[in-house]
Image (cartoon, rainbow, N blue to C red):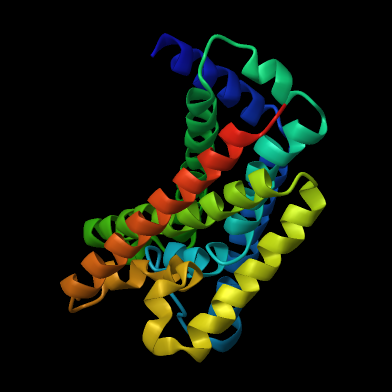
Length: 250
């Protein structure tokens, strides 16, 4: 356990030293600012109130969960595995007194930490922007809906990032993994539209599943079904990714 804690701490330090973290933060700020400027322009230009203070974060989330978040989660996952394999720094990582499973778990847990921290950061920004420009529509229930939506979004994005982890251990080149991840994202999204009856089986279709949690009538059966599908996919991807990671000859 001590070895895992040390590995997790080292991976966390490495994660927050990456320039991609700063880039993700800057793009997140820009996305929130551009969204708020657009909403304000419509409100003052056309006299229409597009969204309230607690509805704005949900609009941001709908766009953010399909663009910036999965993109940077992919970058981080590739850096953690393909990047270290290509630069031969993985050898140094594996010389520490911790098992390969401990190293793999520490990396995956840090990937989850990145996704969750990014969601919290964007949620805080969008809530502040919403309150700043439209404080009159704020409510405790609205804030609770926002928090629930952002927490729910973590799970499908994390499962997709496990697919990237699997690809990163299957292929050595980071560029190849990135393009294959993009193709997988587009293919899964396309298939979820074409086969809409089976969209629950395509993980990218769940990036917007937070709407199930905050709708007027909550479909408990559908939520439970999607939780089970995501859990099953996550376990399989984690297991397959670890198998490839453990089988690699460093």
